[in-house]
Image (cartoon, rainbow, N blue to C red):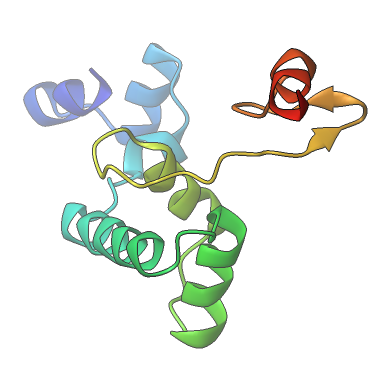
Length: 115
């Protein structure tokens, strides 16, 4: 709305931002490149297909330290968690603080396997 006021009415950016309660930083902020996001998604899919036991942390460290991409971990994690790229997630199968992790074996299932 602030951009519309600046374009149509010729109002200054500062006045339009104060009127609509938007900071000038938010007004000037441009979206990230979609092509770059698709490149990150393709790299993550390739990494998780090649290394099934590789979770987000190892994937990010590989991109950052081995391939020397400058991407922020928050941006990579946002793309990693999107449902669209179909990245295979590693399921936790160990106990965490005495509780079974997501997708892990419950104590009842463990007893059935032992019998």
